[in-house]
Amino acid sequence: MKKPAITLTPNELEIMELMWRENRPLSRTDIIELSPDRSWKASSIHILLNKMLDKDAIKVDGFVRTGKNYGRTYSPALSNVDYLLMTIKGSSLYQNSRKEATIAVISSLINDKDITAQDIREIEAVIEAKKSKLK
Image (tube, one colour):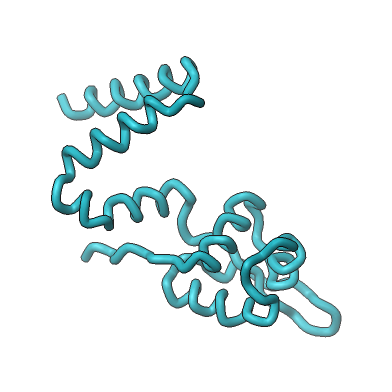
């Protein structure tokens, strides 16, 4: 059965982006300390993390000692690329016109002003590998 797309709130996405950037398990304290410009209140971290666990966006990675107690550490359950693809594929534009939406996204990315010749060579290699698999 196909897993439904995960929809994150702006606050949840802010936490996910931090987790992707840090690329290591983080405790609640770590998340609060590494987010000085956060848009959410520190007191709401428990609620945000539980909602993200319920959505399967994050997972409990382990435990760390915090003072006399132990606290859970969390890590992303999906990569930033997987989340981006899930978001694109979940959009009604993609569902209604898969081919056109795919071409539009790829064209927009290739035509981005910051793309380099090396980026294009890597994209070409991915396309060639896919073409070989389809033969």
